[in-house]
Image 1 (cartoon, rainbow, N blue to C red):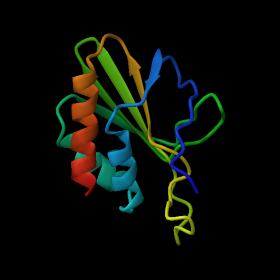
Image 2 (image 1 turned 135 degrees about the vertical axis):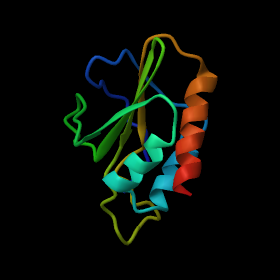
Image 3 (image 1 turned 30 degrees about the vertical axis):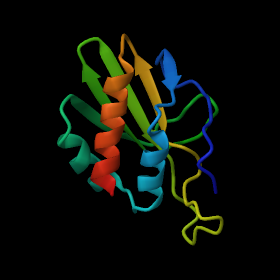
Image 4 (image 1 turned 45 degrees about the vertical axis):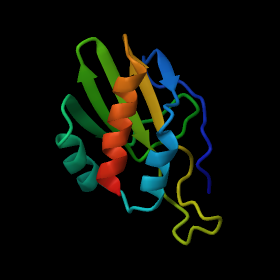
Amino acid sequence: MSSQKVRTQFEDYENQVFPVNLDKLNSACNNSRINLQILEALARTISNYKKIELYPVTEDRYQWHTALYFKKRKLEVAILFPWQQDFVKSDGIALDRSVAVYIKGRHEENNINSLIEKLSSGLI
């Protein structure tokens, strides 16, 4: 499979961003069996958690496994988690593609990096 970063549009989010620590989250996801319960429990420990959604679809028609939504003042963040379909990790990676991060509103890079770090640490 792949942890390739794919640029595509998601709903009305203005930008897709690639935080400097996104590879750490990809690695944590690749080495964990993520599911709805695990992601929701982890998200609830992070301030500004808004909701979880199953099977969101991006403009390229890829159906993601799960999306986590966060909101802090004028910033909204959607983090989309891909499917892990290569169970034997034939090329060392189970993920279909990289985790995707979308933002709406004003943001500081440190806020996004901090959120990614919390998710990564919670999955390790």
